[in-house]
Image 1 (cartoon, helix red, strand yellow):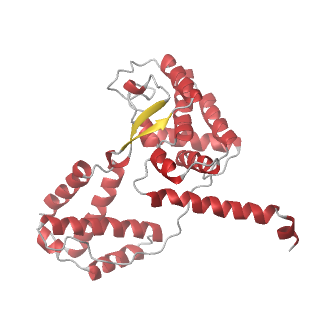
Image 2: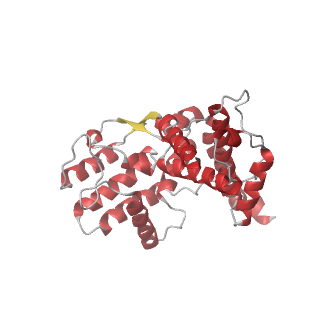
Image 3: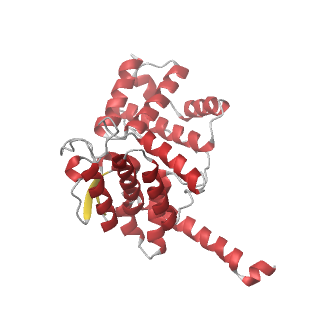
Length: 298
């Protein structure tokens, strides 16, 4: 029966909560590991699990070498699973067992500078053998840095989005939509790619295509970034996702308020956006200590 339990859990995550495929897989796999360890197969028994069972499962996972961050994600997914189990059985208390998770340091990738972001996009574009694929990769990276889009969001755009105006409606995590600004340089980059693309970019098909006409894969973009940053001497943390963080950090440094930044990034809670203020303050202090004459003389 565990198969039907996992199928129902997967359906809930994908259809009702509308989580990303990657998150759905991670949550289902965590639930599967719990069922394998406990031998439970039905919702009633699963709903009866308490904090000691979660603690024991985390201990087993930590023995496998799980990091604090991964353990925290595992606990979050298991608590969600147990809360769902209790709701499925009509329990009076549908809350998951309380259990303190491992402490993790909230950090963000160090942002690249505007010149580095543009240089990376340009380098990736020049590395491609075919002109249209170079224009494609350049347009994708400029969307990440210039509009703060996630890589998955950029790759989910369709031909209907090809003729971009000053703003673009984007569907992010959990099916949440937001409006992002599209700078003239980004519109130009997308327009150049569309003009050069040999494939028919119909409104319902993906905007960014692979060389054979299928959807462009995230892995291909990530590999291109790795090769380009090595060529131009950027650090390993200069990833596609770091470009989105750079977008946020640079806006914050230019005076953007947290609420506006939250909307632009599509964060569900302001707490997610507030990480940027903490990181920005830490970097400001670091700069002060390295540059202030008194600090240098101490």
